[in-house]
Image 1 (cartoon, one colour):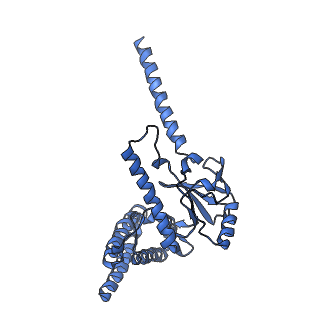
Image 2 (image 1 turned 45 degrees about the vertical axis):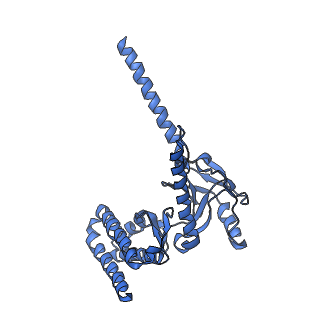
Image 3 (image 1 turned 90 degrees about the vertical axis):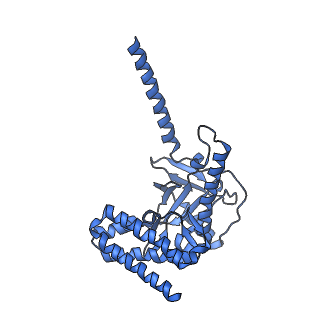
Length: 293
């Protein structure tokens, strides 16, 4: 009898945890509720007639699931030229148990910082972010329904006037670009790609723009030969980064710590050669600072 009761209790516990697991699995999937944002005002149209026509063309095609990051669900256009990002707002909303006010305030601050990064990228770093269009608050002026297919192939019709979203040119992530080159043994091209990224960072520093997230092997990429930023949610503006000494100190963390660690994990046979080139590039940048001083 005791064994039977224990078995029933064990089964109930297993069922309970299975239900919790299923809830979080379902909750983590793409759906309108996870990307819907409460209206907090109206947004003026910020594109001319040419861009408006181009936007309609871009959004007229279907999109399919591509990836999911910490901040967004990412879909790729049928012609594979653009990516459409919907912000995953679940992390900024109350879950099963209502949050205490201080926790909710912190979550709202995080969401504002995320959107501030995209606003900064669009207004001051658009040439590196390759953002064609973005809408950070619901906009009733944008009357557009788009069809996207989630990771399971289910189709969703999304009213874009009710959600925040971003359209970027489709890029090859840096880790994929460098990995592909090194797999072919084209070390010279890989070095040049990495140096292009360092130049991009220095150009941003000169404008007082820096990225709080140093994981640039994942946050950057290439559209053709052009280096770009894939994730701009942690971009910030700070005047002190216009000081090239400060900028180079930050760049050192990216060029040495992040690059060397990634190479050691994936292509240790090329690590020393590539890091020597990166160090030389940093030395050249340092020399240019000293000459100006």
